[in-house]
Amino acid sequence: MRFFLSLLLVVFFADMAASAQERYMDIVQKYRRPQFFAEFIALPVTDSDSLKLVGNIRLSYDNSFFVKNSEGKFATDLTFTTEVLQRNAAVTRSIRRKIAIVETHEETLDRTQFVETLFTLSLKKGDYEIAVEVTNNDLQKSLRMERQTLKLSAEPVAAKQGGLKASQLLFIDRPKLTSDAIVIEPLGVSGNGIFGRDYLAMLYLHLGSDSTCNISYQLFEKQDQREILVSSGTLSPNNLFYTTALRESTEDARLIAERRKTPTSQMLAFIDFNAKTIANARYVLKVNVVSENGGVIELKKEFDNAWINMPYPLYDIELAVRLMEGIMITSDEAKDMLDGNAAEQRRKFLAFWKTQDPTPDTDFNEAMEEFFRRVDYTFFNFYTNREFGWRTDRGRIYIRFGKPTEITREFPLNRPTREIWTYKNLNKRFVFSDITNTGNYELVSESQLETE
Image (cartoon, rainbow, N blue to C red):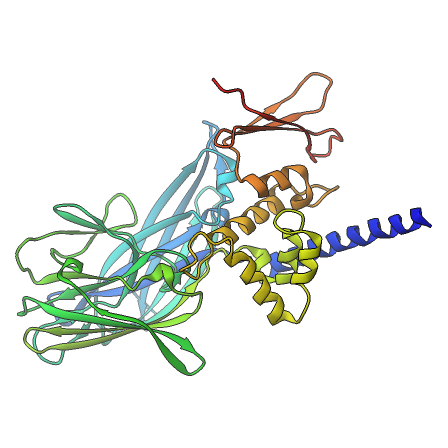
């Protein structure tokens, strides 16, 4: 009888693990999409009938198809072609070739790194269609094609009186400021924000006959049909810079402007609305610009503060709890966390992770994101025919301690292959052995590093 009960328990936990793995695979298939972003904004120029179009196109490494070169490194060679059409006729185009080189195959699978290009094109005001294609030159294969409609008849925005003109709002990483230049890197997620990221909104102004202006903003969270005020403010002189016209960098996907100490006809404004603290939700950013001569411009940008590359288990709270069991929580704690309806499970799950959050004053939880990012890594990198990645010995160690400082392989004669993980920051070493010769490396020893 005791043997029969033990057998039932083994079958139950095996079925539970298999079920978790199946749910994991279903989630990956449902939510894993190519990370491709294309964004275009219009900048004002002196000619009232013209504009400068800035385009930023990005494709993630894991969709770029790297090839191992003669030096043992991995490279991808892409061509980004952007054609501007009006009434189905080509107006202008940009063709840019970009090569990315990484050291390891693991880096080629990174969804957080991108091959990207940035370009500028001069256009007349009007409505256009943009056709974008990304081609891998080694494979002679189109990786991505997309078309967008751009209504630029009224862009850039101009005040009804005076010569004040403004670009659309562009989200950027914090600019790099030197004594004589400003370097700007677009956030590059098709006009959206990134949850947990410290970013700003940039506004490029053509002042005309004005020499200064006052800029204020309001940030609203959209909840159903309502707009809830989150923050507001007026820009200080420290966020306003007289510059030359924006130009593209010749080396990377950046915009550059030369700083000027005395008033010029161009100005850059950086709007800091504490983006790192806001939730994973939909927002509206409203900006009001008033020139010294009474010209007024009102701008609005609606966007998602998107969780780019959200770890897959977080799409399913029950799965996430099961993956925490035995590492972050006990079986009894897991059972208690899963007791109740979906809303109660979510509340208890988030309450637990709030106690682990290193930045409790923000909505983004770095500890939770890091834990499940590690789980994702084990799923894709340690899966074997005999075991699920997160249940392997390497998987459990990776989830607990993260990426090793160093990984080495040994191939002893007439013995199983060994993999040695060294954590110099933790003073630990783990040795795994492929005892069954199936790729499922089992932990055979754990030791402290010898101190010098």
